[in-house]
Image (cartoon, rainbow over all chains, first blue to last red; front, side):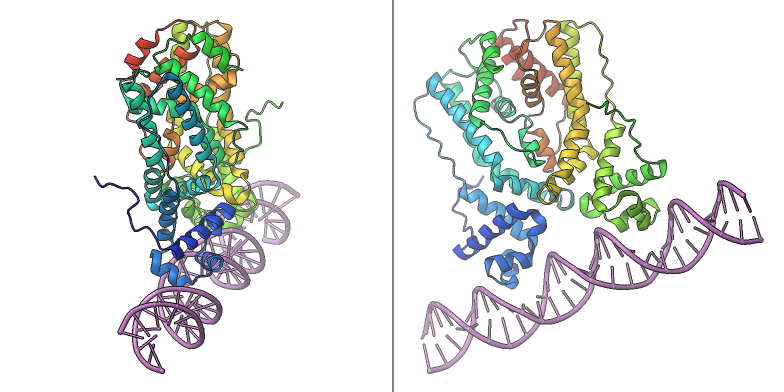
Length: 219
Length: 219
DNA sequence: CCTCTCAGGTACCGTACGGTACGGTTCCGT
DNA sequence: ACGGAACCGTACCGTACGGTACCTGAGAGG
């Protein structure tokens, strides 16, 4: 397994500029607006350079995903001594971050792009997006889960299943709804808090009564 | 509120044939494969008829969603006396049905299509898809929630929130992953059972110990 | 037998895309 | 100062799409 950290050559500054413009075009107008001619015009470069740098249009799309992923760096303050309060805060922070990322313009646009291409490119872009975009966030979540278990604050047998449970509690069908054009939540924090409460009721060690949860979750 | 049941004129049998072919093309090759010429050839009709019947290409897409929705009829056996066992069975059945629907070829293809179009048509198709496709399943779920509450088997203050919690527990990030090209679950039933267990631990009246849940959910 | 309507088949048009080729310019190393 | 690489701008090509027009044939009704 490679270190997979960002010691990859990535792209030159000029190429990053181009990819930034590409993301802007994609966010503003969807994949129909991301034409090679349009990108060349917007980025003040020649189409020939585009093809030289990225191979073809799909190469541009893949580079955009890699570039966007390279901008996201999750600062996981590991090592801090875990108490139940800190765990709760970390979980809530993670939930907020997750919702914020998923609701971001660029994330939505890239997901729409990859999903739209899935039917015709054998999910190459989809795989890329899942790997690049998810790796950081998944790793952080799994670290949180394992840390909680080590500190005897969480109980589960399968950390991955527990994480997916938490993910479902946080996101529910919100992601797909946003991808379909619906607006996001008014208050991501509220949603994250509720999800953490439910998650701790399921996998926490503190015997919070289910009744107390229901009252707070129903508000 | 209109009855919204399928007393709408829908389409003629001939048009339904055409829409069936359109769905087939979409499932097989994505929206790039769904061209007016291709559809006319596959359905043995003329492009002129397509434009006469559906207006333009977007009209065809909208008609496909309406047609597909008209084929799905959820048989909600309401009225049956609700015990905790029956509630649990109903919840599990709902979870299985939900997963099966979301993993269906046509559903995935239509969702991909609508998501891909969202950026450029102002989410018109997305709204259509959410309304037509979700209404049935949401209604059935809400009926189940309310029935469980009336029978004092479920406790919550906000039925919609409870439903979304259940949805998240059942689906997690599976839908988006499938949209991105990943395969579905091997065993939908297992997933539904686990979701129901967690949901009942959160909102059920029977005081199932959280420990018992953790053991069964971690397998 | 005639005619009107409806729908299928085909040819066509304008457009816009992906991809390539070429001339001109800037910049860097020597 | 010179040569070459990199790059920009533009023009170009083939293709394929959405949409339109026209012609044909099959029935229905008189």
